[in-house]
Length: 294
Image 1: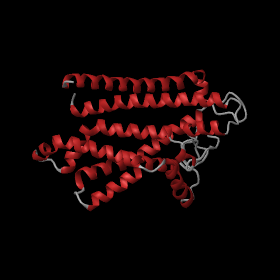
Image 2: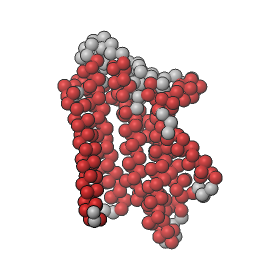
Image 3: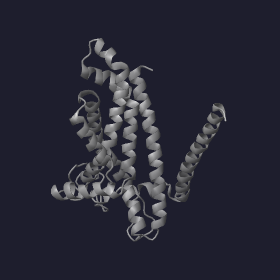
Image 4: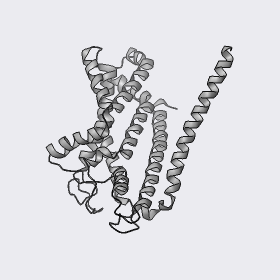
């Protein structure tokens, strides 16, 4: 069998595998959305869940998910990108780099349930905060930091290889080069890390069960306090995210229409992740184009 024929056979096999993967993903998403289609309405998205009554919604849980996303990203992005810059541009090869790499790889391999138990011990018990939004955001940060750091490091190394010497040769300092040249070039790849981190927030349940809790106080949306538990913006209140809400419905099922709410919540969760991915890529492309002058 000649090389060209082998190449064609391998190409066809790879195309078949790709089509099967895409088809499986589309079928999975379509199945979830189809089963939850009856719940995709404004009332379901904005109303509060009704305890022991049918017809509840996911308004507070949806808000909690986005607020948890916001809190975790404002912690994860600066630390993750900063660590990536340090590993890519400042740290020298040696024992220190090996130790940091081992620590990152170890953190990346931790199961979310272990991180949840760690969060329960440190962020909930030792700090005396209890089950709070902040505890959940910190637990999610622990989960997301390894991937965010690695993605940022790889993106910065790949970008700096093309433009670093030219920028320094023109008289720019190392930090000016990183800030004005390397980071804008690495923005699309860094944004990929942000998208992965965001998806972890939307889909994570195990770690949040032990840190942010499965119940929430009645919220007063006219209260903008960061510390009052009746305020939806408080970082020291317990909060049930959408993923935790789905788990709670499927495990306890105390609401008469728990199955319907769970399938509707799953459909909303999948749609939110898809929308966030598309919007993030569009925004990232616009940011990159604004820096590159395209």
